[in-house]
Amino acid sequence: MTEYSMLINGQAVSTSETFPVLNPATEQVIAHSPKATQQHLDDAVAAARAAFPAWSATSSDERKAIIHKIADRIEENMGELAQLLSMEQGKPMEGFAGLGAGFELGGCLAWIRYTAELETPVEVIQDNDDARIEVHRKALGVVGSITPWNYPLLITFWHIIPGLRTGNTIVTKPSEYTPLTVLRAMHLISDLLPPGVLNVVTGMGDVGAGISAHSDINKIVFTGSTATGKRIMEASACNLKRLTLELGGNDAAIVLPDTDIAAAAGKIFATAMINNGQTCAALKRLYVHEDIYDDMCNALAAIASSVTTGPASENPDFGPIQNKMQFDKVCALAEDAKAAGATFMTGGAPLDRPGYFFPVTIVRDIEEQTRLVQEEPFGPILPVIKFSDVEDALARANNSSSGLGGSVWSSDLEKAQALAARLECGTAWVNNHAMIQPDAPFGGVKQSGFGVEFGSYGLEEYTSIQTMQIAKG
Image (cartoon, rainbow, N blue to C red):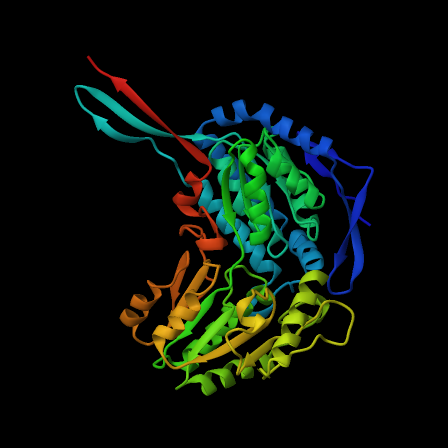
């Protein structure tokens, strides 16, 4: 087996204790990852703290050039990284609509290169005979990054590249389910940065908790569950850390009766099942008007019946659910829906083979209070709920503690936009869902978190404001 090491102060660091990393398609161990101690974390933070003054003093152009070199290095190693990602995360290399491991690596390049070009210019708000007043954006210090297992490498770059671009130094912790691709990628780019600017520690939840509570970390950016986000927020009070929290979502979509089913069904299916449904902003509750309910259910079921689920070696459309905990949750939600009398048009039970395989599942005739509607499944299962009154559908869509994304589907764009504006979510789509891009801010409301990522809005989250007043005369 390949040996993996952490990255602290520019050096590869091994540990006496390790933990196994499984291939979710086989449930077999593929490697062992280092298990950090509190001392390892302290060393990483100390290295980042020591590297901060010099790194933050580098010019914007110098940091931009380095980040472009990071993108080049990742592109040079895309094949290796995609294979490793597929093995530990489970997603196929290509997958349904080309949204597999190769897609994630392509997304890494797009986000790195776009973010490299962003700037934080000085804003002049007054310049007259009395005074010049400028607003400067300044780096915060050490940024702690805690990432999930669904898009291990992409989300790591979402976190660290804006931090590096603005002059911060980084300590990042990948999910214990998927640490290998992140470790490999960070070692590939480590020589492009001064020692201590980028550090990677791996381990279980205690390492993430240590990052949250560390008094020498100035900001945390976290993508994951609402429950964990709340614990991070509580622990971060020790030194009033800045926080960006992108937490769970249970995104609703409302399909109006004038929707072109032939045009919409494929996009609805793709945005519900992207990454096997393991996407925070995937479409997870589908409200369809009674006039077209049967036709939409049939169209979705037809697509679901045409796709394949299996290991990457079989070149399937969809792979396994990434880990047993999530697999068990999806199975439990399906069983609960069956017990509540819902109709399963496709799937509904795990495949009889090794691995965490659950087929794409479309569920109709399901009641609002069923767990599958009320809880985020984070897997390849979609409840389709019938409605007759649009105001009732909107109320049900908004009746959630989550507020990450939502969408409205209609042939009347003006009507759809007016309804989408009333959705209580951070991103509202019209005739689409789950589509994000590096220049548009993305974040949640309610218990889906706060702060945004991407674009100039996301970049500013890694800075503090310093107002400079220069008296004249």
